[in-house]
Length: 285
Ligand code: RM4
Ligand code: NI
Image 1 (cartoon, helix red, strand yellow):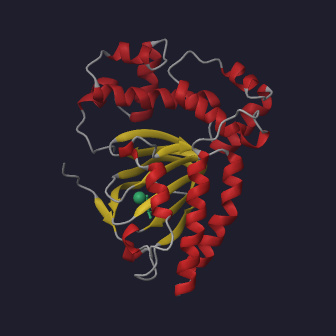
Image 2 (tube, rainbow, N blue to C red):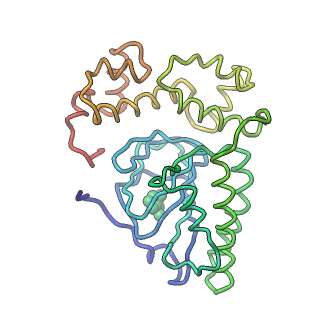
């Protein structure tokens, strides 16, 4: 498949050939066109929201989402709203071999072997990795052999913590410091169901007023809006992946009114569902 997109080069970001990992904060991430890289990146959303187009799949992203983006992946950011993120850029080919951070990421995060490349990191884990990311950022500003080694060691720790966070369960009860992540994850996995947001709030231990407020602070959107965007992103994928009728897609994606679906769809994409379906790929303008 031929993509008409730009390629970002490590030499524009890394300070030396020996550097294997650096941090690029995007506070905020501005809209960014389709591109690939000659390095890999771990992207973690800190707050806000936006559309992340990854290999032609739209994801409506918000806080705590982690993506492991391989060099050859194509992605773009669109319609961002206070989207704050941390990018950790790394180069497998340069690693010294003394640290196995790449292996950790590979083993835990490589889509091809059935494990995940996209998951929710809860806010307690975000708080845990924050100082490590800061330390990594500081080390990576210098470029001498010891700083390079320290950066790799820090990334190694980060990778372990982040990989473990994929398997975090709420078996021990849900600490307040992790519940927003669990809510977002729950909504993402159940968005095609008939969801009553009041009961979701209750189930995760929120009063309905503090739920909306805390949700908005972290994501720059409301729970209702988030749900609609999640459903729309499912619908966008289904429009392209299937020949099902627009009405069927609307219903299977959790909308119970196909007019409302078409209205929200055009409001967001600027086109009717049927036009979107016909639109050539790799063009998200
Ligand atoms: C951009 C965007 C890209 C990333 C580069 C380094 O702002 O986040 O995804 O590859 O930075
Ligand atoms: Ni990128």
